[in-house]
Image 1 (spheres, rainbow, N blue to C red):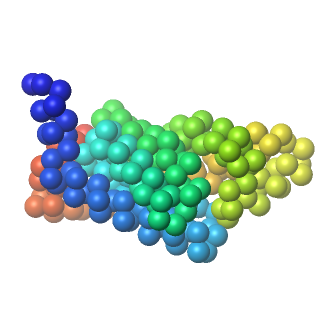
Image 2 (cartoon, rainbow, N blue to C red):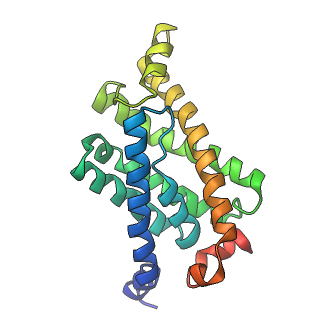
Length: 198
């Protein structure tokens, strides 16, 4: 099988449609967060969905494209965090492939792992591009940790990890529950789903 054929199979019409739907879901969730200044983000439901159904490459593409499109439309800050969204999709697909999306306790652990991995990518972006403050609802926590004597880097790291643990565990559990209940006619053709249901 040539590389071109492999890529074409990975991004068939069903997967491309799923990615498009995921981008809309992510942006709507992110806009809700922006409007309400919530301490969680709500912008990864679609990315995690794609990661579970179609694998790490498609999941990463969904996350990356979400943030780039969102950045062009309404929120330039989102574009800067496109690598973070990419990591979320890739990590979800890989964790599913390793069998960590089969039981509820595994899903919770996967949410924590996703939060830890994205923290490694997000913290340098937030510190060096934005001085630690992005206008998100979690910014107050950065200021709080700084007042307690933490460095800016550690304040951002604690905040990013803390808010993302809650967000990604909740998101992963909700998406997993939805995927487990999807009828066969909607999941047919998504070969990566075998790692979650198998």
